[in-house]
Length: 238
Image (cartoon, rainbow, N blue to C red; front, top):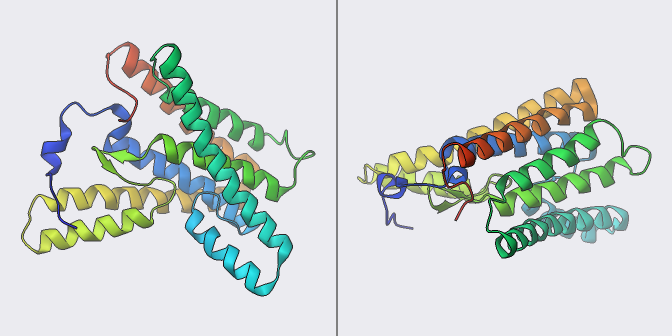
């Protein structure tokens, strides 16, 4: 894979949601959600590649109940992705207004409901993790570009690949590639940090730990709204 554009050439008037610090924050949020769900149910809410492998493993071991759980988790992620696209289509058809903060606030609201225990009597912990997988699907489909380049903030296999790809390009003499590699390593750092924070807070506060990513999403939504209204900046990713 060869680099066709330098980072400096990609900067321009970037939409807010494609900027590196936003990608870092989103990766932290996704990592925290994953830290919670994996700790309480040993199912990945955001990393569907792991769940796909587990589908094969559960078929091989004939663990049909776990197979159903994992399959529903993958389906929930897919439905979340579809929901984001539906919101984007409806808003673009009706008003062409920014849809970013709507998605962020919906994510935050669902996480807040889970964190405050409103679903505890209606759903099992595994089903709650499926709801979080739905949220991850929303976020992953809504925000998947950094400086015009595709990346993942809820599943980072591609990010690992690209980070080391550009690092090797730098070692091979392409000096501009180092900045690009740093962008992807920044996302990886955010995802790992989120996993650490999510696990530690879950150990101490259980589902209340989800108030932290919910709060971050609310603040991010307010920030994007302010930047749109007060600064007239483009917000939605391309």
